[in-house]
Picture 1 (cartoon, rainbow, N blue to C red):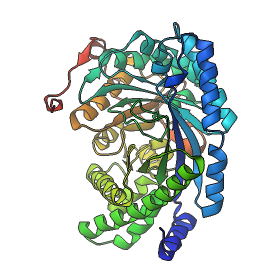
Picture 2 (cartoon, rainbow, N blue to C red; picture 1 turned 60 degrees about the vertical axis):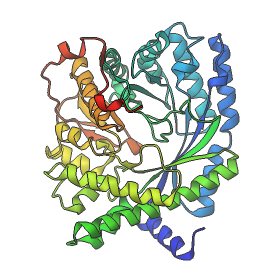
Picture 3 (tube, rainbow, N blue to C red; picture 1 turned 135 degrees about the vertical axis):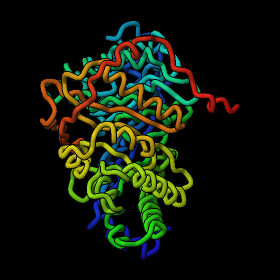
Picture 4 (cartoon, rainbow, N blue to C red; picture 1 turned 180 degrees about the horizontal axis):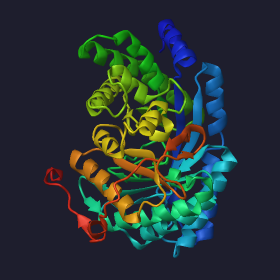
Length: 454
């Protein structure tokens, strides 16, 4: 139970420090929707989502009103569609039909986004998984709220380089098909290594096959709260700094726990996990970059940035785990360039480069996230970026990801605008030295030796 002091602290965090619950996400299994007929499968999918999630948005709004806690998004994740459509989809167009069914269902229940138009190909691709990947440009350009992810590697299996090479071309095609909107379609796609089954954040969220029929996962965000708390740590040593972050993360997670339990009770759906991720927005004062700068950097990207981020990520996890028995998802600190005011400024000034961002991904929650790159970047270069990130995840036994946007028709120094929580981003340079002979070799990069722990 929350005591009166916790209530006062929570009110202050909401009113003055931009604390919010970023998302209540309902995960729904679609395995029982699969049939041999694509139209029947689409009907089953639409019916199940609109039945299970019919009260999700209204319940979230009721909790907001009852507790005064802002809940920014209500979302749905579903079983990877490559599995659901494996029996009925004979062409990429068949998978696109399912994407439209997901889009219609999500709009019917009023959620902001639906994730799970996904494939898990860390070792190799089945014909159905290849068809889904090939359908992505059409599916993401023709739907509004459907999000997609492809897991191309894991510590146990290695990296599927055939999938990595294919995704370079797919991302270019998505960018081309949505060029009139700063290649926005790429915002809705992410390539993963070691993807978790219970991520409530988009674009990488899906309902893992290890999950039950339905579940409620909650993602909490509070970089502004951490930033304000660090005002008391000016000039203090690392012990004080770490304790401050850890205690603050505990308080943030308690808010998420309350919302998750209430949503679970009211919807009659089991509670899954709290994802405590410091997910920023473009608003001033809601920035992971600002937190890093208060730790002691003149600007994000300066020497010491990776060490500061590693410490921040670790203390966030330590504090969050004490506040909930079920912390999961990606929990830690996100570094999406377009969604973080201080990181936008650092990228625009040249202090934060894509190479420094890659180094930071070794210790953050995810990876290269929401980075705008020149539209003329080659497919092979994009595949190389994905391969590098997947290798970091594979070797370090952590989740890594790539969500880059090659903005067609724009170059270095120009700005891409994505709107809302997705923000805006200066287009930053990418090393264009060719890696085509590497990414087109075919086959699989084998798992590292430390993966054999059975």
